[in-house]
Length: 200
Image (tube, rainbow, N blue to C red):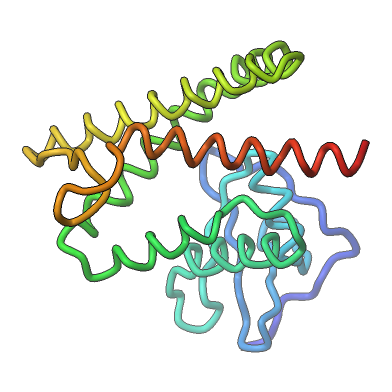
């Protein structure tokens, strides 16, 4: 099948009539925006995501949906550039859930968590701006976030009639889950303070 002729711009107009923009991926890994008639890059798609453009990526030959794989590739590219959003511990835990009997619950839980975060972004920015004027204020923000995240987790577990683990170790040893979450956040705050001090 012949490739469509590329245009001269990587612009991405909004999808029309509520339909997602179709991005075709060819065997040579090139990506083609069928709406703007241009070849695009992963960085272009990342910009489209930030802008809120809805798109799907399909295999140009088979028509298979490749959206998930391409979005994961965008995340990988961003992470390798040093823009780290995914802690190593989180990645290990996520990998560990593949094949677990709770695997089917993970997507909806992560979606709910990110949606709650998105809805509160502006309020969080304002709160962080005010709170980080003092170290104690910044600590309080993270402790509140830890409590909210744990509450969301407990709600999700309760939906499926599952008990929330109270302790970190398999035999009930270690600190309670909530306390452990706060301690992890405190350690992260200390690390951020050290980085800021070095840049000052």
